[in-house]
Length: 558
Image (cartoon, rainbow, N blue to C red; front, side):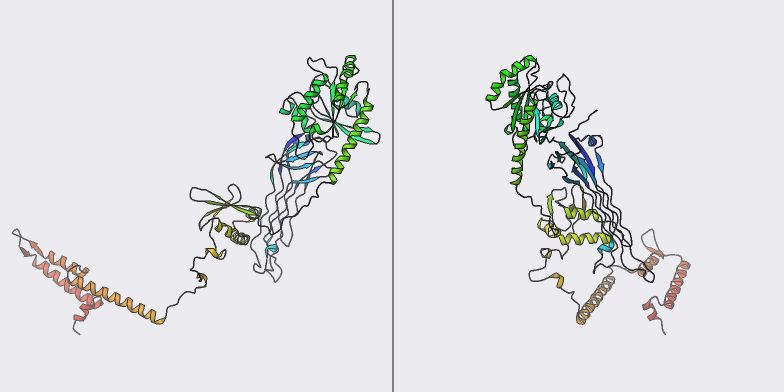
């Protein structure tokens, strides 16, 4: 089971903001006493805190999902919703926070340093807060926004004064156990140390920490062995102590060749900007395992060569503690010198000035994207995206309030400058977002007015007709009707068409005759013809009585 974890991915979800309330105050004799809806509470934040008592990220390795509480909704009678509780996540000092793309957010290298890594959502305003002189009784409220949700990457870089570097099984774990109260795992096989071990050492009035990290091999800077796991923890150390094995039994190895390989790997490892390269830091050499006779002889043989390179060399034994006192004083001296240089460099650093953003800053951009049916205009910005989340699109009044906010922000003017026209597709927010067809208003920008220069179509009143114009139009319609009626009469007299009564009489006339074999005509049955004539005269008298045929009525003698 793992007991030390130095990198982990956190899945965070901050609390959502509470919705605002729509309420109207009702009292005796005052059924509509005004809006009194409260505001929604803000969601809880997720905050990373550098804690000196935390030494590992093991807790987040076992439970990487963390969340905070949501804000409460607003209520009537001006009662605001409760804010979600902020949740603090303790991390070791030296933790580097990165986003999913690998960009560094903060290096938490000081105790008590705080970072709001996942801000909570903003609570929505109630209708009482939205009331104004022009909108005395809003029938809507703003919704709460969503809290931040995503992943962050935590990478622990051990903060120590001295780092013990060397080949596997060179005696680094035994040395830290002999000089401090640390009790790392010690065994006689390579790569016994799989994770860094920290130990606190006291030397007179000075106190410093030493780090025992996994051993180096050739190619460690390229990721072989546990090299990268080791080198990450060496970045923050002030001094390096090369622990060389003088009693190794592996062929082709000696303290000089081991040191050359380690120096090559340290030189190939890139450090972050602003930090001193590893080989430019203070370095000491410890020839370990002189309790073995062959090791003492080899240490005495190579000591002169190492001192000729400019290193301070100490012959030590982690078993018998020989030479550890002198090594302890030398390390304390180097650490104190490094601390003095760091303090002087800290005093010369430029002062950091944090300027808050302007409250009236627009902060939006319009991106033109190609589409199948024309260009798509995407609006990205903090304010427009937040306003979209706060709008209840089932409420027409809330949608109108959103349109007013977007117009005041100047979005319509920028859409016109980007080439948008009436009916263009506009999307607010990334991804799918909120899609709508843009309908520009005439009050948004003067360029949208298409009237001739020097005129304004909005100021033109509708023209009203005079009495003479209406009289002329009426007589014109009457003359047109008389002309059409006269034309119809001429066409009927010319036989171009017949009325319904004339067509009926024509059918009766053809029914009263029969075609002969020679092509002539003979009268039909005389009785039938008389009956038909009698019926016709009766129908004529009936039509005259009903007044349906004016011409027939005029022929009847008075």
